Image (cartoon, rainbow, N blue to C red; front, top):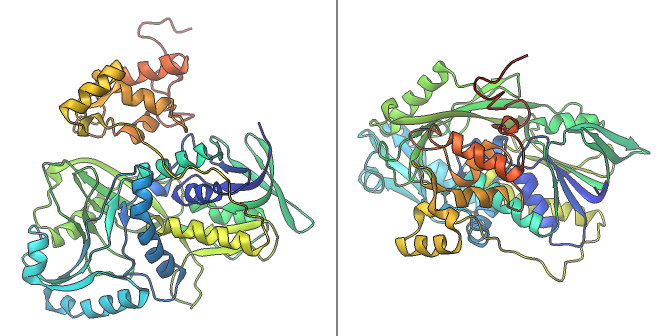
Amino acid sequence: MNQQYDVIVIGAGIVGSMVARELSRYQLSVAVVEREADIGMGQSTSNSAIIHSGHDPHPGTLKAKLNVRGNELWYDLAQKLDIPIRKTGALVVAIGEEERGQLAALYERGRQNGVSGMQILNRDEALEKEPLLSGDTSGALFTSTAGVVDPFQGVLGVAENAATNGVTFLLNTEVRKMVVQDGAVRAMETSNGTFQAKWFINAAGVYSDEIMHMAGVGEAFQITARRGEYFVFDENALALNTVLFPMPGRKGKGILVTTTTHGNSMVGPNSDPIADKEDHAVTREGMNTILTGAKRLVPSVSPSGVIATFAGLRATGNHTPDGSTRDFLIEIAREVTGLINVAGIESPGYAAAPAIAEYVVELLRSQGVALAEKEQWEERRQGIPRFKTLSHKERKELISRSPAYGRIVCRCEEVTEGEILDAIHSPIPAHTYDAIKRRTWLGTGRCQGSFDYPRTLEILARELNVPMTEITKRGPGSVFLYRRTKEEVL
């Protein structure tokens, strides 16, 4: 294994993967180091999955600039990388006359940020766009450039394209020490050995402050993990046309009700600061708060239609350039050389990710890093075929080429053995059940995996040539099976 690179990116979420893809354009050796067993296992895939228009961030901040630029980039990027995305538009909904009076200020903020396609709607116009809205709706700000994305497919598409273009992904590799010599970050010690690089890009999400501190940088900077809980609804229980936001408050954008790229709907999140950066618990109190907030926008929201719940963590930094407004922290470390910090990337970080990558590359260019473009660079990527979405003719043709596509493993989502095999043998291979689930959407329907578990474990064991007792749900410490039934226990 190569232990020395030009650039090492720490963190394989949407930001780290996007930076790696942008760097893959150039004649550089690049690696991405990720402590989890798969890419995108942090905040990048446990969020609202919205490509924000950019109307909300405070004008003049990096958030505002990079959100608007990221929104411009995402739709073309998703088409090239076969990432599910829908430009649905979004409504910031005013309930009652008092809130209607706040729409003009939101519109002006969006105008200052350079957001196009905005319109203030009256009550009837808002209800025409989204009939399920509350009867107390008094108006809305419509932002036509907003949309929804499959959050994991976004990370996967970008990361696989980076890997195809020569980037090395080192999974199950936890950073334990940053090695600083003569005022420069020279290497990092990890659970899988020591790696050297000329530059390190810190995109470690909720742990980005700890990476900084390992390098003796930004001791005053702290990340607070803010937990956001969500309900996911069966596609027949709640059908929306767009993304619905309440009027924003002190804690952020508030409890939203949104459609998804998969055709079902989702509500959330709340925003609770927590001390444990691994606490993804779903709480009764949090869920009650979310239902109350969602019903304020869409009264027909009912817990009877819920098929899944989850919680994600946002990396909120205490970096406040003007003393009050939270912003992204993206800068070359001042205390040492060889380190760029990309920290405090909370909402709208996903939407801003392509622009963040551009920004980071320009920071490297400003430091004299030679960025010679490759003669051959593949800008496109083809994802796994989605059997569920194909016509009968397309299904027949696919099965004729690969009979495994004729064997359904997940009945709810119509996921086939062929899709599972493609995921296992992809540029960034899926070696756990959850990795298969994220790539194929297996196990996400009404039965939540109860039908497909045994067959999926069998396929993984066969393809990886390991016993079924070694197959895990999400990585080390999460095995499904300990022994065969009636096997003698000594």
